[in-house]
Image (cartoon, rainbow, N blue to C red; front, side, top):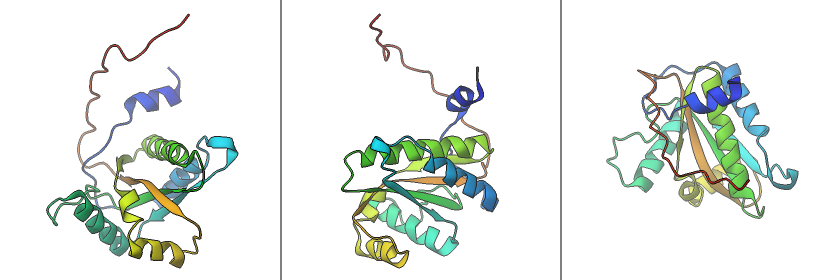
Length: 175
């Protein structure tokens, strides 16, 4: 089995991370992998915001927790020190698909570097909030953006979960 398919089969969503910050070059490599995701009509209409600042990471975690309706002490990013937020151009017809492919690349790249990751939702709701629209302005990001997802990244704390059995009856052939 080749390395890419092996990584696809072995990657798991991680729900417990160490607080240690991954190396900057590893985070950059993960973000770069996201830039190479397939995208509709070559539009490259998804962007990534890399959050390594603990104060901002914790602020986003609290907003995500509130949107999710959890106890305020719950961390929906499971302690991951890095949050890669993928947004799509609302005016691009394949934006949600393109952003989803970016998320997939981010998670596979993290796995390939020995890091854990997990896709966390509610970025859409966050970036409808005035303070996150303001954050985009502060970063110099213009336009109409919608959150696709958060890729929480960090060193795995504990064992990698086993793969769930694959369900039968999910592939149909026309030969």
